[in-house]
Amino acid sequence: MELNLINQSKKPLPRAFLKTWVADVERALRARRVKLPRAAELSIVFMDPGPAKALNLEYRGRAYATDVLSFQNEEPLGDLVLCPQVLERQAREHELSFREELGYMVIHGMLHLLGFDHETNERDAKKMFTLQDAIFEKLRASL
Image (cartoon, rainbow, N blue to C red; front, top):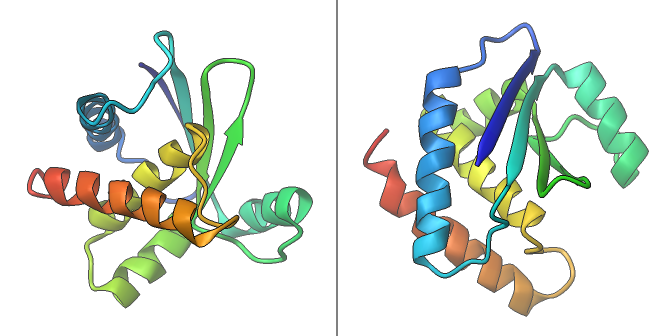
């Protein structure tokens, strides 16, 4: 999978961690027989709360900065926009390290890009979160 990392935030982008994490998530998805495009391309963008809020409002009608937004595009997989300030807050709330929260939300966003959904019905939500949690728990030891 080709990975593009873009930092539009005041916070540092943990490039080495994200490269390793995305490769590990890709292997875990393939091991679970999740269909991934052969020539997948993923962009991860770190964005500060103001611009992240504007994107969330424009594309989801929600006027707040969110942890992760996923955008499918013509190139298989798509883009993930992550707000590190929101992830820092959520990490404290969930009693996780920043890397754990970031890793969890990267899995979440990648699943959305692969067509998984948790907002339509409970059955799909259970399927998505079960897979997300299983991959996270398997890879968490590497953090």
